Length: 74
Image (tube, rainbow, N blue to C red; front, side):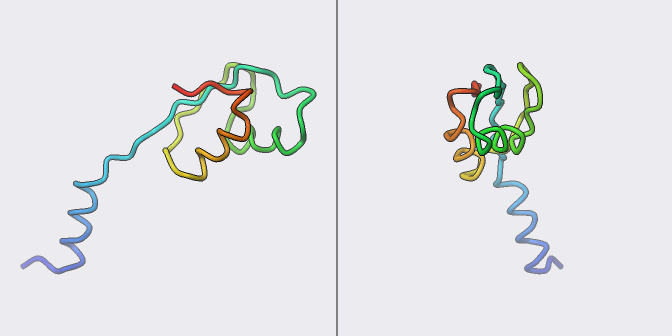
């Protein structure tokens, strides 16, 4: 017998394919606003040409939009 909770988790696992974004720092953060530097660090980008694969969420999209002139998204 399958409980409702077990059925919901099985459905959630099967139906949610997490989308991801590949973000690369392509321009130096030197000379940028401190908030933009903090956003780049928040994305997990530490050095020039460093790349991170991040989950596609509205929060991550907003951070990318804020520093779009510094990063490339694949």
